[in-house]
Length: 284
Ligand SMILES: NC(=O)c1ccc[n+]([C@@H]2O[C@H](COP(=O)([O-])OP(=O)(O)OC[C@H]3O[C@@H](n4cnc5c(N)ncnc54)[C@H](OP(=O)(O)O)[C@@H]3O)[C@@H](O)[C@H]2O)c1
Image 1 (cartoon, rainbow, N blue to C red):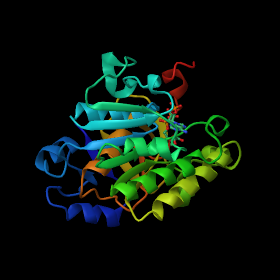
Image 2: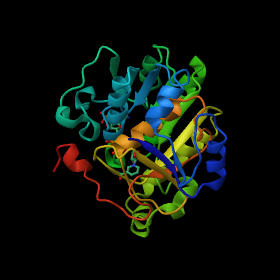
Image 3: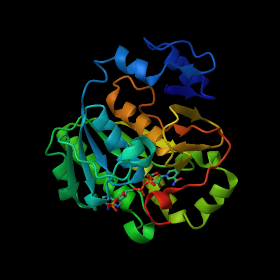
C-alpha cells in the first residue's frame, strides 16, 4: 500500500486536511495514493507527460510508471538506448528495453531549443524534468539552460504544469542536507549545486505551476510507497517513490505542493543511504 506522509509541515498538513477525499492527518499519514487515484479519476485521467532526461534512473521510473498507468510519454534524452526498465519498479523485467506504443523517445540535447521543441510537437499535459549528470559530462549550466528552454517551450505551447527534480540542499534547503553531504556541496559538488540553484530560480520565476522536488539520497530500491515531506534533515528515498511523487505533481490538478519546493525522503529523516546508482548503471 502506498502511503503519502507529511512530517513537520503543520501548515501544509492543514491544507491537506481540508481537501475533499483526504482523511485526518493523525500520524500525519494520508490515504493511499491508490485510493486517491480511484476516488479522483477526473483529476488523474490519462495524460501525455514529457520526461526530460528520460534515460536517467529517476526519469526511467517516471517513464515506466506513467506507461503502466496508461499514460502517454514523450521522453528526451541524448542516448535513448540507455532507457531500460528500472530496477526499482521493474521487478523481473528490470534492465529490459522499454517498448510501448504509448512511448515516444526523442534523441536530443535539452540545451538545444529545437530538440526541446520536438517534444512539444505532441500536445503535452505535464512536464517532468529529471536531468542530471556530472558537470564534466554535461557542462556547468546544463540544468539551468535546459530548464530555461523547457520553460520557454511550455509557455509557447500553453503547458502549465511541471515537476523538477533537484536535490536536498538546493535553494533554501541547505540546512536540511546532512553534514557530510553539505561538505560535498561546498567542494566537489559546488558547480552542480550552483547549476541546481540557478535551475530552481528559473523555475520559481517562470510563472508556471511548478513543484520543485528535492529528494534525499536516491536509491534504486523497489518503491516503499512512503513519501515523507520533511522539514528536518534528509533521509534516503528510492527513485521509484520520487517518480510517484513527480507523476502525482503533474497529474493531480489539486496537488498540494504546487508552487512549493518539498524535500522528500522515505527512509527516516536523518540517515543517508549509500547510493547504488553506479551498479544500476552497470558501472560497478
Ligand atoms: N544521487 C543522489 O543521491 C541524488 C540525491 C538527490 C538528488 N539527486 C538529483 O536527482 C536528479 C536525478 O538523478 P538520477 O541519478 O536519477 O539521474 P541520472 O541517472 O544521472 O539521469 C540524468 C539524465 O539526464 C540526461 N541528460 C544529461 N544531460 C542531458 C542533456 N544535455 N540533454 C538531455 N538529457 C540529458 C542523461 O541522459 P543522457 O546521457 O542519455 O542524455 C541522464 O540519463 C539529478 O539532478 C541528481 O543530481 C541525486
